[in-house]
Image (cartoon, rainbow, N blue to C red; front, side, top):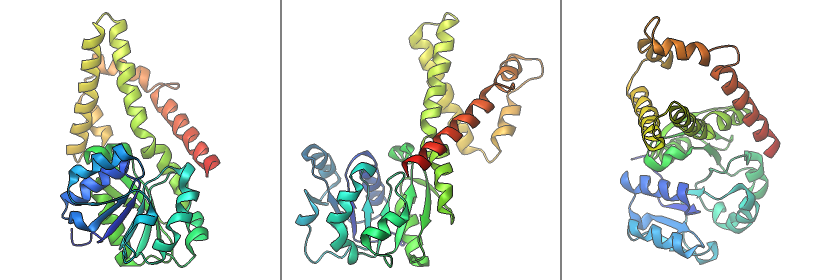
Length: 273
């Protein structure tokens, strides 16, 4: 909490922005030191429940003397160019800029805001909405140790944090953890469908799949053992689990499919960049 920058200016109050704000406030950021720019009236109303935070419809409406320790950009990549033009002036008097926009490389922010601006790029994922996200950070050369601690504190409010020094690896990060929750949801979906095909009532099949996936995820979360060890622990020789894993771990099984899928996501990430 001592490393949490203050005040913070958040541009974008959508699902991820709202999750971040909630995490910051829970970790001790005074509501009065949080400013949010969100043009959508319904989203502003939802954010108002967090207390006396500063809610603004546009960057132009910010207090003239506001000098944010951190400017957090939580907007979609498609509108980032417009947003950067709007925040250029306040970015110049901020401590650092942190972006969570997928596919937007650090050089794009340096071009818009100046090469001497401390820029941190973050790739979070959707479990941040329940405080169980995974975020990978990458900083430019203008970021010192204090700024890196501040950026880490901001993202640690919604889950675990890791750093990379080679920004090119962000494509792999995006493919693995950024898109990863969708892979898990598809697993639950496919398991439920398989159970229904075996004769289970669809609502029961879905319940079994959801609870199994979420329960196994929690077990993995709480255990220090690698996933491979946990898998072996529930696989009795000659049993039903071994029969299923023989299919899933076959030459054209789950491992091959996931490898191809993650590679496809990484290629698309490079294309979008």
